[in-house]
Amino acid sequence: MKQSLNTLWGLVALLTLGSTTECFADRPTISARFSKESVEVGDRVEYILDIEKDRATEIGIPDFEEHLTDDEQRERTAAKQKMSSYTEYDDDIFEYIESSLDTIKVEGRRLHLRKSYKLAVMETGNINILPSILYFEKNRELPDTIYAADSITLHVARYEQYDTTAFLVADPTSQEGYKVDSLRAAQHLRSAGIATQKNLPFIFAEIRDYVTYSAIGIILLSFVVWLAIVIIRRYLRNRKERVVLPPAIPPHVVANKALVELSHRKLWQNGKFKQYYTHLTAILRVYISGRWQIGALEMTTDEIIEALRDVELSYESRRDLVAILRTADMVKFAKAQPDAEQNEMNYTRAYYFVENTKELAEEHNVGKQEITIETKIHD
Image (spheres, one colour):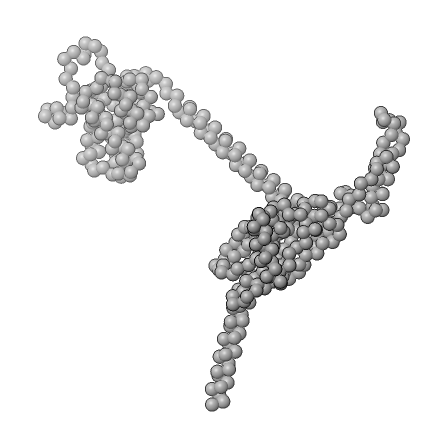
């Protein structure tokens, strides 16, 4: 009996410990810092609050009195009166400018948030802040306040206006006959406890943003220059390639020779359908450009068909050209793979298109019978 009771109490203790551990595991953690360790009164500074919390955890973040409507201000005042454990930051020390909230990282259910405030410092001396947020724990009527592990300090130096006429000395070389003794002025500032910019300690955090943005700017500028060089070089290369010298031989002779060479390469027989139809249509485009002075090399299939609409062509020649160009588009853009019969048929169509449309002497055209695939088969 005693052993059973001990076992029961052990289970209760484990459950209690597990629930307590889970409760603390869900509690947010915070840390904060100022963007600068020291400023002069009236300067701007960024207050950065880093928060790590569970997705389902509700929190309240200080807002440094953002600009609100009258109704929103009344609602906030009423809410603060119910949250006795929540302490706002002193508005007489800081003047709110703007703020932002960003999600820095997501790890499973844990969110890493960053709340940034841009503030103007209105008081001098050492300003100590213990960063805090509200934690709305389950089954509790009022929220709890969670503080950072350490407080942060901002050193705010005062500035002093002084009359420069008190530090004037004679200077015969000057047009006015006098000048300001900067050494005496600096000694006066030091005796008043005011450190000049020359004597202030170097703080990298104050220039970190400038260094970061400068590096990003240099990288982006380098990329833009590189991209411009690539585009210009490609344009010049393409322009050079577009310069086509007039052929010394008739267009149909060039086309027939190219068709013979294409047949010997056996591209589609080796599964290179795209290369085959690219070369086949290129041969026809070059032929059309030389035969009718149409810029077919720069045109799409539909533009070529439209450009040849006013050209005197037989129905069969026009039909064969359209069939070749349409099949080539399907191969190049839809990755079609025509069968052997269709590939041979398109090659034959290209050959007879050139033969039937080539430019001959006038006397040779008299009584000419157009050759088609059907007439060739009947022969």
